[in-house]
Length: 185
Image 1: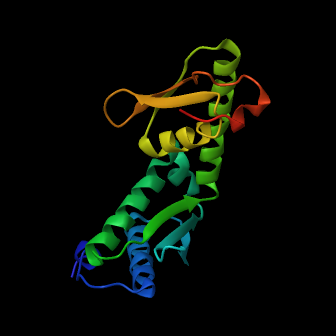
Image 2 (image 1 turned 30 degrees about the vertical axis):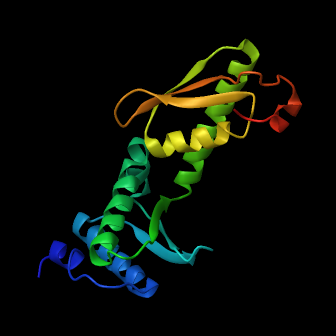
């Protein structure tokens, strides 16, 4: 039986230990076949709603390959693992996150820092500013951060996967520190 047929083998109901075992087996196969110098730790946590979050932390000599090009390799690992779980356990609602050396947190903090700078420019000048085109997951981080401040609003502009974010002053938004208390439209 080939490597891919092992990955996309039988279907059934999952227990978290079965999902975790499948993810570990899949990662071992990928790392071996690609000859990566990587180790991994897989951890499963239960959420309040009964769903599970499976976290994979990769480490080793090839970490930079995973972080290169804005983490596209991490995203690829994450997508592949999600699809393998969905194929083998169609009823399972486990979400998967793959990280390497805290890259995801660093990336999110950089997005928030840039959003804060643009928000301040928007508030000071009283006009719209634009954030560069971002993929959906990054836009979500920026929109959620900006939604906490009633003085500004944000929306995505453009077609396709990558869209710009327009940050603009909220109508009737207070320009003082108490703006957090004002009602959003």
